[in-house]
Image (cartoon, rainbow, N blue to C red; front, side, top):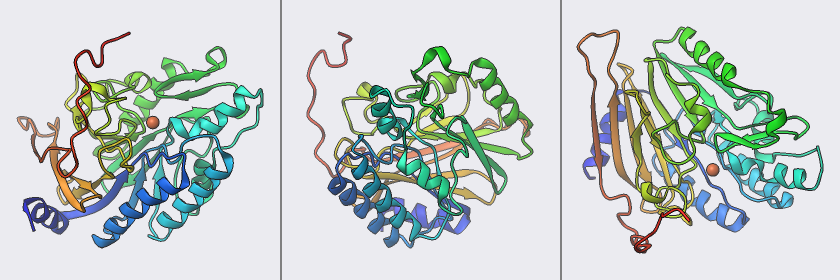
Length: 339
Ligand SMILES: [Fe+2]
């Protein structure tokens, strides 16, 4: 038992809600997906499967081999379904890989096996319609917003990576859509708001454009959770390779990168256990599933407009994110320079 184990157990005693948050299993090969998923599930079950809900922040699969996509969808439906709790899903860019192939073949029909499975699975949540940009649900004193990538029914346009991916001329949403989203958040009856998506808000890792159009977020927004940027991978987050926590630009709202569930691009199979305590404050425990141990913990309490003088408090404890695994090779001088 180390400090993180003690904190986690203490947190469990005070948690009113526990949610298991993960993203980016993102494998094109079934064997790789199964290896990583098995590792995560075994560790999670070893913890006593404590969550009342699963939040999956996109990129469940990768590639356009339809047969493999169906196998990996079934693999994950069986695994997560065996836990007997609801799952909420925000789609991510790789969920649209097969649709992209269809588009390049000139087809208007397409399929997104994992997303469609979630739509049909009893009690699981995602957007009801693939053209919608978000869905929301209540969790205790929180209203939770999931922002999703989206695609036209006829495949004429698609948005991933927080921007338009194809069909710019027919893309239906402009600033007014994101203004409506903000107004909906401002009008919600809950005292706290929590957001989740495949991608970050400005200030976070990688692609941030569309979510930035919702800003300024209501001050009741306590946290944003996202995936997409695999911790420990040089290629995409680049200089932010090990950045797990950032703040939303211009706002006192932390955002947390939970990627990735795989350990091939990312440094290890990674997820976050979110605890919501009796006073509605939050605790996040970052799990290294390869080593079956906690590697960081974060306790954000943003300032409160309802409590004048409360400028928030926060604690962040971490071992090096590459602890237990060889640090990736230094890419050398000039890395990251724009070509
Ligand atoms: Fe992604």
